[in-house]
Image (cartoon, rainbow, N blue to C red; front, top):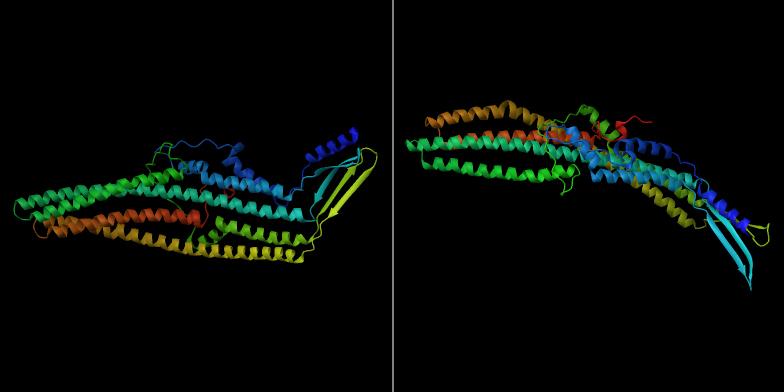
Length: 446
């Protein structure tokens, strides 16, 4: 009895060490994952984060964010799991160790055995292809998370930088208003102006002081956004804010942007992979017509050598069920294609709007820098001289001051909007990552 029993145990142990046949695309999926992992999580460990200082470049902050962002990390491990799932999907079910005994008054027969289920021909291969397409979609979800993380850091970074400019302009204007108040008091003392002018200057100062306080207070939520973009929790120290401003560049021409966006936008690429997955799901549903098999062998221990072969086959007789599976898979493909078309349309619209916004910003900045601000500054100088000589009223002087302040703040606002618009066009719409991002598009393919 013991030699036969141990034979089956040895056979089961041998089967436990078996390896399956890789599915189509499985090896490439693992190579792609290893390329990214070697940069993003070498040896499954987060690499050392770059040291952040106020004088370091924006790229250091972006690398820090990409390596430290929990959203990016979650998408990375979702992709990792989907790559491993290819092996699970294309593998045979585990063999089963069986045991049967006949007992009358005494134990008369003992039959240990081994049973293996075999899915119908082609079923494992198509299941592997479905899982491969799903892993491709998960990679592009990871790429979207990377680009979104970069955009969030850039958005908070530019808002913080230009906030300081707005505060600086407002403080300079506040100092100017203090001088205007002195002028109004001097004019009042010599009878050339009334206290109304003094009160008018004071009201403008009070309003601007409150505006500056509001701007100062808005720094905290922007700091919180910047800190969150870097993947830092509330109990970690605040990061230093960079002192230099690094402008966004977009080398692509406007005519090439749409082609680039349709070719590289990660959301479109993920939906394309979804369409491939749906196509493979149709093939998988059609395979439900194919029966599955089981085969095994039992050995009679008490009467050796005597073996009992076993075999079974499923009978896919429920035709309405099979038809429903195929119809559901076909409907899934149509839905995937519709989502892809919708995303392509959305990217086209976003691109058109972004290009218009950038051209509008460019025209506005040219108008402000070349005409409105210089003229407003000159107008204020004339108004100041005219008020001192009694030729114009204080309200004309304040209107000139308000105009200059408004144009200066609008210029900073437009520059902020321009940087964020460019970042959105290059990252989210066109899917063009920074050179240091741990993505396949930034690495040589094996």
